[in-house]
Every structure is written in structure tokens, then in C-alpha cells.
Image (cartoon, helix red, strand yellow):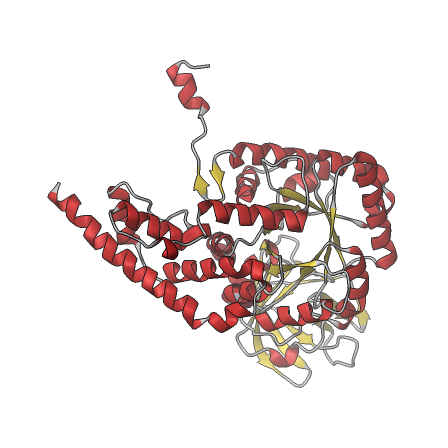
Length: 490
């Protein structure tokens, strides 16, 4: 008993030191906080509190808290300072009422709910996240499909501005609005700005081709412009020019979601030579139009292309939400905010986290986003996994979720959700497990596919089952059927 009695003194000292550091962090950033939207002020303070907490290794303190029957802080993202103050109060410390943080559990939960509602609108089912569905070209003329999507649970229609054209987009939007009016089911319009076109272009024997065969250890030439004169028989390039001069010897280039890996072996007057290190596909083909990632290269490319800027008037007029692709830092976000401020009607920005720079700069991106009344974050897991390495994705996507919860920012869980089911009609076991984690987010994005209605039905089932066990990452104890069965209860 004596040992347990001594522990609270140690705990109180450790927690008091953390609180002092939290106050110091807020005070040192008072100028930055003054620039934020007034509605975001308390959320920004809580984000700083959480970042201070997570800048320390508190695992021993967590063990002591748990043994003492107190909160171990494992689910305090949305109300970090108040959770620490509550622990001190349980240990007998007096805290002046004026010092009690107004950002408590209920405030944090309500802010996330309110921000989600402002972004994504009303929905019929509050038990599961919002559902966003990616539109294909065929949707522009298929009213019945759009109606069925709404009736199945679609809350947001996603249009990718990297494909099709304004006329096609407008047809999609008109059909969504018509179906929404007739069914009484609301649906927001989300439009993704395409960003730089990091896609392959291939030339062989002087002609553009759809594909080439590659093998490991093979060397191939990469140039900035495949249409200019070259002595090589086979050259590859990128739709986005200006990349070659930024590459250095040893830099990796990943093609087609990482299926093919190459490294820069040397630079020459035409461009660079690539050595093919790995081809994880039995067909050993590189196709034109496939994605390219440069995980070792700090690319100096503006995420807003001239084409993106040209379609902004259409997006501002018709979209409720605008997705910002390949954003890397707060300056990138400020640029889009400035451009959108010129329009009377302005869509809310969704920051897409799909580069290693965006992960590194996430707190700064969020603070910049907080200059707006509301915004969201999308975990674009496809490009992100290739950029940071597949083995790190699980860790990083959780960290993004935690930081966003601390800032009360709604999160969209995106890319390859039930992808195999969507393409083939049959889900894999692993993607069912993966889909259950989507319940931690405020919104789930579904890609286009032949079985999208089946995907929505399956996802609804998964989210209802897994979502009932936790609020964000805090596990809740609803009655468990296994326990009821064993104890003989109905």
C-alpha cells in the first residue's frame, strides 16, 4: 500500500511538467494562433497540447497511471490538457477553475461531429462514416445508377478533374442533384484537382507505344521529352516535364504503384539512365499512363498546374469540396486558399496527404488549414504507401488519424478500400480487415469499379459491426455476443 501511495506524487510531478510545457508551446505561438479562424482557436491549442505530449516518451508514466486505475492518456487526442488536469484532480491536486481547459471530451467530440457535418452534410445513418463514391465517365449518363448509389448510402460524389472535361462533370453533377431532389437524400459534390501528371510516356523506335517489356538489371533511358530526337531505341518520360534535372544518381523511381523499381545509374546529356532493380509482375511490362513516384527526390513542382487553375472557376461554382493533390507544405495550401478567396462561392478544401513531405509537414498544414472555418484531410493511401514505403503505411496512417483528431479535423480514409471486391465481385480476407479500420475515420472513399453497389453494401455491414466497438480509437464495451452466449443470456 505504501508503494502505491507514493506513486501519485511521481505521477503528479510528471504531469505537471508536461502541462507547463504545453502552456509554453501555446504562448510561443500566439502570433500564429491569432491568424486562425476564431472557430479553430481551441482546436489549434489542443493540437499543440497533443504534439507536446507526443514529443515525449511517456510509456513508463502510462504504466504507472494504469496500475493506479487512472487514464493512461491513450485516448486523449481530442482533449489532451483537460485529461491531464482530470488526472491531477483525481490525485487530490487543486486546479483553479479559471485554468480548467474548456476543451474537454464532450467539446472535442462535438467539434469533430460539427466539422464533419459542415463538410459532408446530413446523412441518414449516424452510426457509420460518410461514404464517398468515385464517379466514372459512364456515370454522366446513368441516372438510375446514381439513384441506386444514393439509396445505398452514398453521401458524397467524387469527380476527378484529371479525367474527362467540364461538360462531362456538369452532366454528373446535374444527375446527382436530380437524384438527390427526387429521393430526398442529400449528396455533396467533391472535385479533385489533378495536380502534376506523374504518368509514364513511352517511345520505342521513334513511335509512341502503349507498353514495353522490362527485366531486372536492364538499363533504360529516361528523358524529359520523349518526342524530341534521341539516339536510344527505347526511352521513357513523364507527362510532367522538368523532373530529369532534379534527379540524382542513386535516386529511386517507382512505377505503377511500386510494381517496378528503378534507380538512377548515371546522368547524361539527354537525361538519365535507369537500372531496373525489381519487376514484381510476371508479365514484366511497363505501360504508358502508369503512375510514377520519386521517394528519394525532393521535387520542386507546384501542386497547382496551369490546368488546375483554369478549372478553378468551374470547381468554385459547382463543388462543395475541393481535393488538393500533391500538397507538400503550408505555402502550397496558402496559395490555393488565396486563389479561392477570389470567388463568392468557395468550396471547402480537403488536403490530400500522399507525399512524405506532406506527412512531415502535417501539423503546419493543419495550422494553415485552420485559417478557414472548416477543412478536411484525406489519407491518400495509394501514393502515400509508395512514397513512404508499404511497411510504414500502417504506422503513418494511424499517426495522421491521431493528429487530425487532436485538431478536430475530419478525415477521409481513401484508396483501395475493398478494391478486389470492386473489381472482381469477391473480397479478400485481408481487405475486409483493412476496411474495418475505416470506421476510425469520418468518411470513407470508394474507388470506381464494376461492383460499387456491392462494395457499399459490404462496407455498410463491416462499418456497423466494427464501428460499434469504438469511438475513434477509444474502444467501447457494447455487449459482446460471445459473452452473452456463454452466460446463457438472450
